Image 1 (spheres, helix red, strand yellow):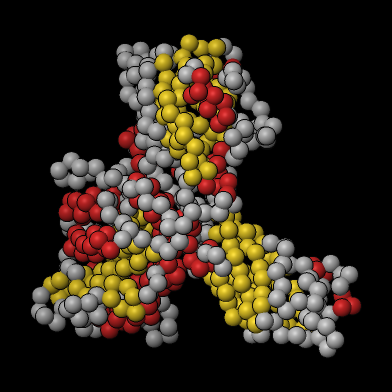
Image 2 (cartoon, rainbow, N blue to C red; image 1 turned 45 degrees about the vertical axis):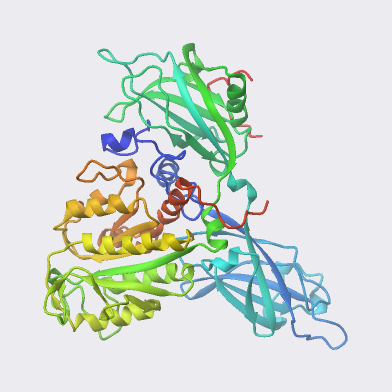
Length: 579
């Protein structure tokens, strides 16, 4: 596989994971493109944040005549309108205030709504010797039901209570402590072997975690240092979710970059995080070895910095009061077609079938609304002639002049339908004014604190007219607590939009030569994702958002308001360094 994960030379030379550009995640913020690439090529979905759910209840109704109820709790997820059981607690005898020992573990996925249902039963005495998995629930007394979404931030706080039919059930969700420990390192090499004939090698490092099956899962790739046999790379940060324990075997490989992707191995060796710490403390170097450890090489790797730290997760921030504030902008240009015509992208089907704009609003809004306390969302339109008689590229969807907010996803849907028949679709397609408006709101919020992060959803059908102005706006906004989600609807050529998305390390450059400080854009063409069928449009849109959020918070050393709760046998062909 080498170290290049894309055909773009510049993107292939950028760091991947390890604190470099391209941070991605589904909640945990620790996944990266190398890991995603491995899981995707293996037919797997990727990494998630495992949560352990603990349960208690109070004020349950007593269903027994001569004693108290014997409650058991059953946990379900709701998928496609159907309940799927994921676990049962033990039975607590004679208690109306039970605290169950049995936990349930569920993978938290930021990009989808995960409804949970909790049902409590009073277990009949004659079934007390029956394994809980074998209990026929229809033969037990039903005490009540409580529901919540795993997406709701309260579920990750101290406790989250849902009122049952009879009493109250409390759910406490917690990530494992190990997922927060991280190591930051600065690495350099000396005397690397030159693999080029007319210049020096262009080296980069790739670090992989060795697994018991003998395979290697890449977890980090540094940037490429051109024409240098003594390179010093930018600092990398590895999380314990990436490397496992400090004694898990890792494989460090040094390659000479080739734009074809056929990178030539300069040398490699097996190590662990503990051994890398020893290298740092001793100020010594670790020797590289040739292919499969056949020969010790002159080149060595040194660790200039080694620091253990807590890597706060997305849920740490959300659970301590940080918000995601949802904003939406809708394309009302004429290329969408007359809203009254069934072939229009804006056509409102009397049967109730949602058009592409409605699908995007509902899908993204239903997820993000749980992270916005007041659920008041700024909503704009662009590219239409308004009632004022001029074409506007940023007008309030609710037709007021001083307040762009609407209440809830339902409010957005209502104002969208009304606007379709109160404006004249026009053009051209400009993003600059919308992005600047969102950036203004995000920037102004900083004077009131740093616990708000803004997410702008732009839904469009067309090709941009102001591509350079849009780039400039995005580069300026990359310093602000803002992410931009773009959905392309219809069958237009959206290659232009892909330029705005900073995947694979390709950060945007403004007209003045300024480079975006981070990737804040995710673009998804709706028709292509729907045809693929492996992942929903909403998941595609939101999968990078936790990583973008964390990149902003970490770059400014913004920490959650409250601190979080506080020997593998794999083999390698390369010998470990001396300890």
